[in-house]
Image (tube, rainbow, N blue to C red; front, top):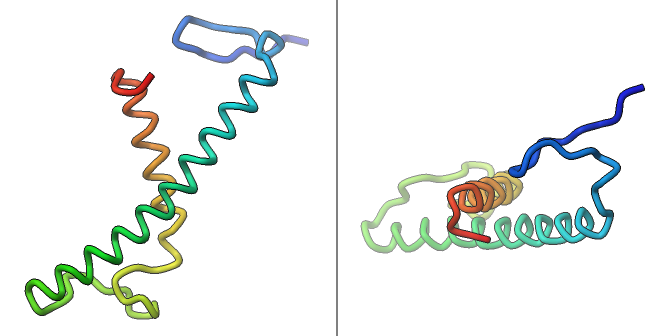
Length: 97
């Protein structure tokens, strides 16, 4: 039976060499980023939709079946995913440590 290997920036590492505490801390950080992105993205979309409506007198986008009109509960996970993607890209290009 072969051992599991994982790609990392420093090369290939064996799965048994991973420390549980590091993985646990990464999950905590990613969960926090996901939840904050969900909140900020959803609230930001709703606020921007209403500000644009007051500025030009019409909605640029609406969610017809949503009580919030300019945002929806269905897009909350998408905002969280967008936050994780931005975090990954910023880490990859060196903006974040």
